[in-house]
Length: 253
Image 1: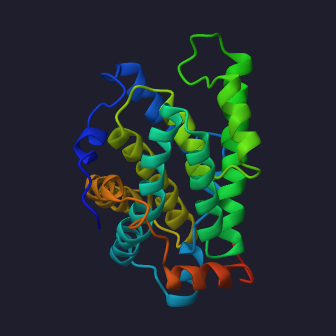
Image 2 (image 1 turned 135 degrees about the horizontal axis):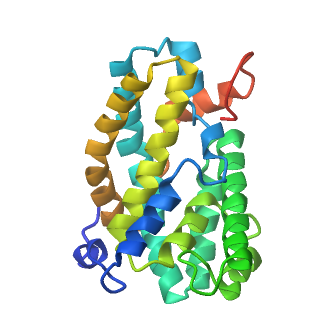
Image 3 (image 1 turned 120 degrees about the horizontal axis):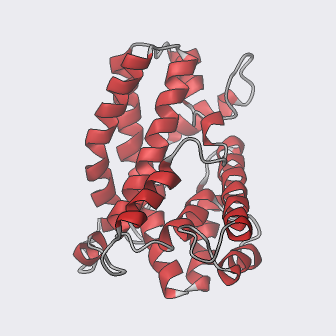
């Protein structure tokens, strides 16, 4: 991993001091109630439960913590950190390059369809905010931003669309990544609760385990540059591909 002198600056409030409303907006973006379809994906977890007997809460917690550190931190969190900066700088060429990287590195058709569907839904949600809210709406992207993403990226991916929404706030990059990671953690825990199934208390213990690991994943994501950002998880890719033909399933990935 390459050290970068800007890492400390990115971890700080790089767009001015965050307002309380900015942190509320990040909580909003992390909410499973956001209508982008995150609840309908398990990202290979359902296949792992079906094919490997992954059922004990402790085993699922270890699985998801590994997924957080080995896949999310190294790929999506690293990319979101760069995309937030690119949106704030108005660097559309960089945005397109980052979006292309996401689409090119998804390792199964289900994972690619997931990021495309959630990206489209996030853009639709931002347009809806723009249309039905006043000019002072907390999360209202400009026409130029939404149009630019649609024009420069034929299939906007979820990490890039999320970065656009997060960049509207004055929150630090680290806080933006924490929001992204916690939203992912909530969706994964709910997938485990439904797929095993697990009790709600067991689910909350797993979520607590993941929450305690998010700061480390965020720091890892911020520290990565283009050369060290990567999306290589062969076992997860195999499980995702197997999920496509799984006989009985609750989730779309």
